[in-house]
Image (cartoon, rainbow, N blue to C red):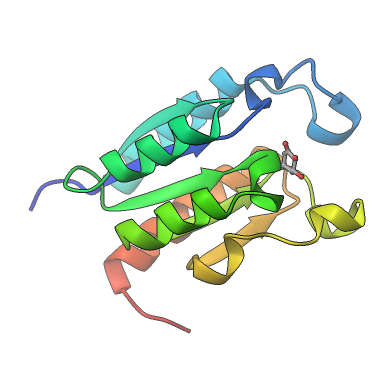
Length: 151
Ligand code: DQA
């Protein structure tokens, strides 16, 4: 069987990681996070490809284009988490397993960050572990693909 392929999607302003509100998001850059995921993918026997966009429609296109190529999606939709019905609908439409991640613990922050439009349609959410949210999320997604169980 071919190695499972995972699409990693990063939403708006995550290209600024490293300089953006380091008290909240730390100093790690997006390139470093992607490198960590590529390294972990070798251990987990999967393929990972990463895409960042500041544009909602571009993220919707990337989700739609995953069909036929990818087996799962790891997403930090960033601010679109709290606003985007379009991204939720795209994720629901492609019906691939999705794990939602956030660097910060969105439930410890402003009220408007407490609601995620995508949380109800994902396998699970990991929030608050900084860059580790992504590596934990990739492990969880691969585990889910291997076991295909729902808790
Ligand atoms: C974020 C949390 C969001 O509320 C915020 O808009 C982001 C990043 C996180 O990773 O902690 O841009 O998704």
